[in-house]
Image 1 (cartoon, rainbow, N blue to C red):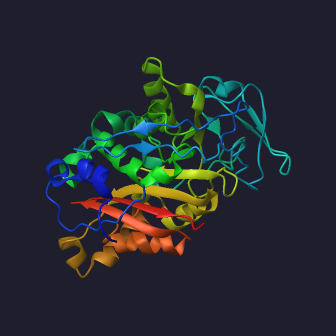
Image 2 (spheres, rainbow, N blue to C red; image 1 turned 30 degrees about the vertical axis):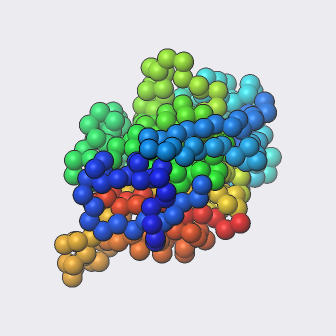
Image 3 (cartoon, helix red, strand yellow; image 1 turned 90 degrees about the vertical axis):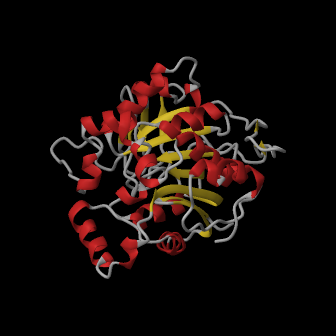
Amino acid sequence: MATLAGSNFLAVARPSQLGPRRRVAFTSVPGSSIFSRRVHAARVRAAVQTATPDPIVVDEKVASKKGILACPICYHPLTHAGPALSMDNLSESTLLCSTCKKTYLGNKTHLELVASSGAKEYTEAMAPATEFFRLPLISYIYERGWRQGFSAVGGWPGPQKEFELIKGYLEPVLGGNIIDASCGSGPFTRLFTKSGLFSLVVALDYSENMLRECYEFIKKEENFPKEDLILVRADISRLPFVSSSVDAVHAGAAVHCWSSPSSAVAEISRVLRPGGIFVATTFIYDGPYALNPFSKLMQKNMFRISGGQFFLSEHELEDLCKTCGLEDFKCTRNRRFVMISATKPS
């Protein structure tokens, strides 16, 4: 945990913009698709506001990956039947697993790629923290007040400034594909797609209603570039992607909602290619919370009751990433807000 990432990061995360810092741990940050057509990673320059802007350049050597979708049961690559996959034709798409002999179908808003897809009698309830975000009301208010509240109570800088920080961390893999894991109603899905910095964006969530909200927000935007975007319903601990096929995974305000962060991060580590990068944001409850002698007990009880987590320090998150095979941990702190980054070893 060292220093902030050069002039670009300083412009985005200087204290005047993010507010007073309490305890900051920074690190220096350096500098695929299933579609039938070939995607070329164009050279893109994205400048942030600094006195002397340092451009972010898409690496043309980052190859587009085809056929990244895999069966969530056996992880064998899926065969696609139908028109080239895009957000506009998901309902016409059929994905086949030649190993399990199972068929996965799309609907109007997303592809169904959970292991229980197609079950007629069997139903499955997840942990309360997961089921909570499947509620239509919660999905509806998520971007209509819920997410905005993070800035007031936790020091979160807001999606646009968070996006600038994310770009800094992901600079080595720009031009590749990205999974927006636990995407919710898609605030970052839209930013990733409109930026043109990624060859493919996959918006992934377990909540059907969140994916419907994501779809509706996108449909309302004029001239939105939907051809390089697909929406997928999947379990974060059973990701439907071929191993070592993904360039970047982002999880915004999500890690604390996962019933097993270690299972989820292990899956993220599996699907990342060598050199691929995981970026996530969550809350840190340090200060008075960490000094409470019962904090660890409270942490365990919260997990038992809700199925979610809360973290008492960034060191817990660093340990989580290292335990799951990721290295080069970095983080940015502002009050309760933390953004972390870790890389799969090359």
